[in-house]
Length: 163
Image (cartoon, rainbow, N blue to C red):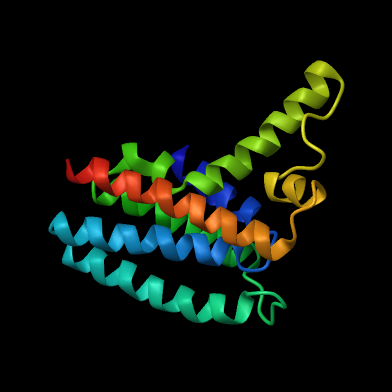
């Protein structure tokens, strides 16, 4: 369930140029640290390599995007993220490490539930990054603020893991 949920959450977040890539850099950098401190050198190397690949990808994906991640990339990286936390025994940190992705997917679920149960939309548009864009934020502002929020929550996750 966690692998499927996380993979789809990353896929849903891959709607704005740079949003998924930048957020995944933050998450996999944190996983690199946690796997290193946990004594998983092979997983550390995998995570560090993933960060390097995502840095290159995100450089070309920031608006205007010249490359797209698509379903294959976002579903694969989301699954890697979830499996990674299982392997290094940090699955309980997944809601913090994948925070922005979970917010995005939960906004879609809430929007669908509101539509069927209440007969109206709760957001102007789902996923949430489109809602804030329709409220007046530019795409660049949305992506950067989501990165900052995600980084703060991921740092909280690292702090919890280390204490």
